[in-house]
Structure formats: C-alpha cells, structure tokens
Amino acid sequence: MNCQLCQKELDAYCEGRSPADTRTQVETHLGVCKKCAESFKLQTLAERIIKKEKELLPNPFLQTRIMAQIENLEAVRNRAIPTYMQVLRPAIMATSLAAAIFFGVMMGSYYKPAGRGTTIPIELALIDDAAIESVDILSNE
Image (cartoon, rainbow, N blue to C red; front, top):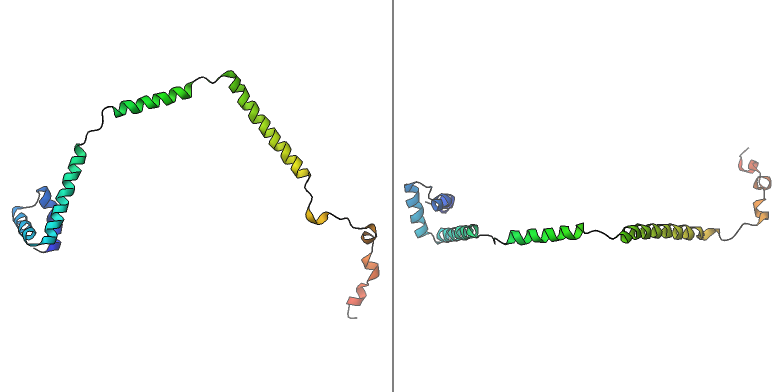
C-alpha cells in the first residue's frame, strides 16, 4: 500500500468502517511509514480533543444570569420618564433647530462674493462699442 492510498483509507480505518483486509494493509503501512504514522497520530489526537469538547456541559446558571440581565435592561427602559423631561426634551430640540436655521440665514446674508467688491463707473457702462468700431472693417469686400 502506498502513502496516497493509506491517507485515503485512514478515515475509514479510524472509524472502524474499513474491511479486514484493508485494515491489515493500513496497519502494516503505518508500521513502516513514519509520515503516515505521524498523520494517524495527529488525526486520532484531534478526534479525542473534539470528543472532549463535545462532552463539556454548559454552566447551568449561565442562562439564568443572562435572562436576569435582559430583564434588568428592559426594566430600565420601561421606567417612566418624568413629565418635565417629556416636555423639556422636545422644546430644547425645537429651540436648537430654530437657532441653527437663524444662524445659517444670518451667515448666508453676510456673504459677499470676492470679485464683486467694486462697481463699474457709469461712464464705462454707457459706452456704445458698435458706434466706435464698424463691422465693415472685418469684411473682405
């Protein structure tokens, strides 16, 4: 038996599902091949660890403690909020929203674009460029 076939049959051998002749071939190969024997040892060790992990029992009081903490959180949430807090909280929110809008409008009204700080003199605005230059100069006729 070669190593590749032994590795393929190792799971069935460990679980006891392999036929008797295959079982003896795997056993003889494990006695000869150190690499496959090491692989077999690691696999059996992993199976033992997994079996022990499955046998662990949870703490019986864990569920009780978790449920008690959940009930405490729900009790804190369901506690009655005082009347003054029910009125005061929305009033503060509305006031702060109105103040933010007011300051936004005030800041927007004080804004001046950078290029429009100077005005054009009236003399320049009334110049008629069409009377100064003739379009006939640009034609080839």
